[in-house]
Length: 68
Image 1 (cartoon, rainbow, N blue to C red):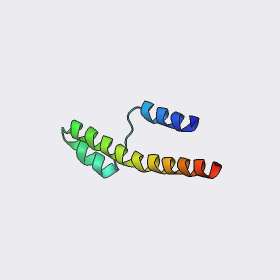
Image 2 (image 1 turned 135 degrees about the horizontal axis):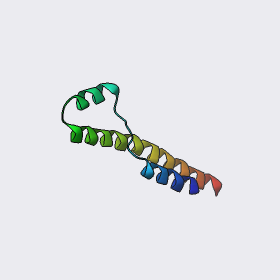
Image 3 (image 1 turned 60 degrees about the vertical axis):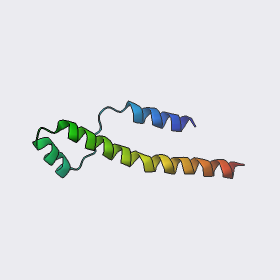
Image 4 (image 1 turned 135 degrees about the vertical axis):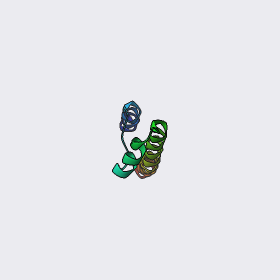
Protein backbone atom coordinates (compact mmCIF):
# COMPACT_ATOMS: atom_id res chain seq x y z
CA UNK A 1 0.00 0.00 0.00
CA UNK A 2 2.90 2.36 0.75
CA UNK A 3 4.31 1.76 -2.71
CA UNK A 4 1.00 2.73 -4.32
CA UNK A 5 0.74 5.91 -2.27
CA UNK A 6 4.35 6.78 -3.06
CA UNK A 7 3.73 6.22 -6.76
CA UNK A 8 0.65 8.42 -6.74
CA UNK A 9 2.48 11.20 -4.90
CA UNK A 10 5.37 11.09 -7.34
CA UNK A 11 2.92 11.16 -10.24
CA UNK A 12 1.11 14.17 -8.81
CA UNK A 13 4.29 16.06 -7.93
CA UNK A 14 5.84 15.75 -11.36
CA UNK A 15 6.28 19.10 -13.01
CA UNK A 16 5.54 19.44 -16.63
CA UNK A 17 6.07 16.21 -18.52
CA UNK A 18 6.48 16.32 -22.27
CA UNK A 19 4.54 13.45 -23.80
CA UNK A 20 4.17 14.59 -27.37
CA UNK A 21 5.95 12.94 -30.24
CA UNK A 22 8.40 15.10 -32.14
CA UNK A 23 6.02 15.62 -35.08
CA UNK A 24 3.13 16.73 -32.87
CA UNK A 25 5.39 19.06 -30.95
CA UNK A 26 6.79 20.63 -34.13
CA UNK A 27 3.33 21.29 -35.54
CA UNK A 28 1.91 22.69 -32.30
CA UNK A 29 4.91 24.84 -31.39
CA UNK A 30 5.17 26.36 -34.85
CA UNK A 31 2.04 28.44 -34.33
CA UNK A 32 0.65 30.50 -31.50
CA UNK A 33 -1.43 27.62 -30.17
CA UNK A 34 0.41 27.13 -26.87
CA UNK A 35 -2.84 26.47 -25.02
CA UNK A 36 -3.75 23.79 -27.57
CA UNK A 37 -0.32 22.19 -27.19
CA UNK A 38 -0.71 22.12 -23.41
CA UNK A 39 -4.17 20.55 -23.73
CA UNK A 40 -2.95 17.85 -26.09
CA UNK A 41 0.01 17.12 -23.82
CA UNK A 42 -2.27 16.75 -20.79
CA UNK A 43 -4.58 14.45 -22.76
CA UNK A 44 -1.69 12.21 -23.78
CA UNK A 45 -0.47 11.94 -20.19
CA UNK A 46 -3.99 11.17 -18.95
CA UNK A 47 -4.48 8.44 -21.56
CA UNK A 48 -1.07 6.98 -20.72
CA UNK A 49 -1.63 6.83 -16.94
CA UNK A 50 -5.04 5.11 -16.86
CA UNK A 51 -3.90 1.65 -18.10
CA UNK A 52 -1.03 1.58 -15.59
CA UNK A 53 -3.38 2.42 -12.73
CA UNK A 54 -5.86 -0.26 -13.83
CA UNK A 55 -3.18 -2.95 -14.13
CA UNK A 56 -1.81 -1.98 -10.72
CA UNK A 57 -5.26 -2.17 -9.16
CA UNK A 58 -6.00 -5.58 -10.68
CA UNK A 59 -2.58 -6.86 -9.62
CA UNK A 60 -3.17 -5.65 -6.08
CA UNK A 61 -6.59 -7.34 -5.97
CA UNK A 62 -5.10 -10.63 -7.22
CA UNK A 63 -2.35 -10.33 -4.62
CA UNK A 64 -4.94 -9.87 -1.86
CA UNK A 65 -6.92 -12.90 -3.07
CA UNK A 66 -3.85 -15.13 -3.27
CA UNK A 67 -2.65 -14.00 0.15
CA UNK A 68 -5.83 -15.28 1.84
